[in-house]
Image (cartoon, rainbow, N blue to C red; front, side, top):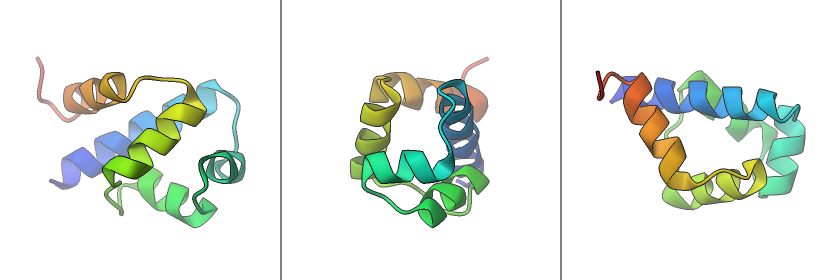
Length: 78
């Protein structure tokens, strides 16, 4: 499942950068820590459903869209 963690991290980083947010700013707005955001982006942590929803709210994207993109990047859809 490491490929899913890495795919989520890649999607999260891209969304954060598209919105010109630092890890610290994203973490603060989502009520998470900067270290946790870093670990998610590196694929060393797996996000909880609650964390995904918090991040999506700040990033103004539907959780389902994020999950679909993670699935695609992890090789689930050709």
